[in-house]
Length: 244
Image (cartoon, rainbow, N blue to C red; front, side, top):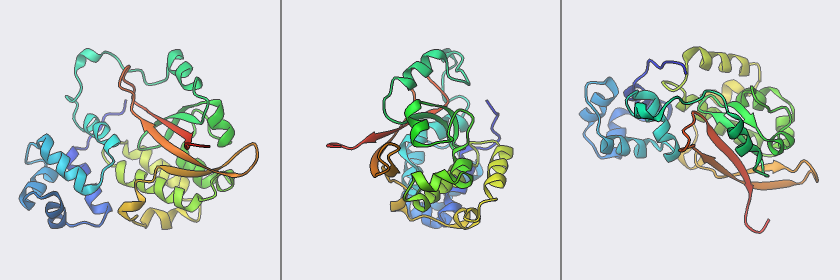
């Protein structure tokens, strides 16, 4: 695992900047004194869990990402007794993934590197397999615009998540490498600079073209963080809605 040099305070500051919020505005939304925000961002204050919850709520950090952020910015967050966490899926991990009949994959966030994808995911998203970066696939593989009827909206959401979440949670060189590769796409610069509305950040549906009948199909997005056994990736699933 790449050693991180950022603190959770630096992450809070980057997140605040990305949504165009001043320190005073964040303090008001979090209902804490401005000096507390400044001290958390600078590292001068040892933050409490209550303070971080208020800041994360005000910054609209997705709940499912908070534990991941904390574990990467605080080395003492997880007990040493958990043992070694594998960097690559074991055979049991892959058996678990391939037991799912709907599209599913293991992703490392926030760089969106694909660690493994089941056969259904590869059918629905041609060209995506272990070793693929989802951002690079989204912007440089022409098939992405075919299988995602709302490609522009999905691409903006992906770029925003990468831009906002990456500082402090991913290696600087890896961030630059992905951004440089994706910059070959004409839409990249515009999306990189664009801010999203808060209501756009929590979409739990995605429109995908069915690989069999070519019809557009709405799918429910589900993202899970493995708890036992502990793993450094997320399980991303697309599931048909009720009655489908």
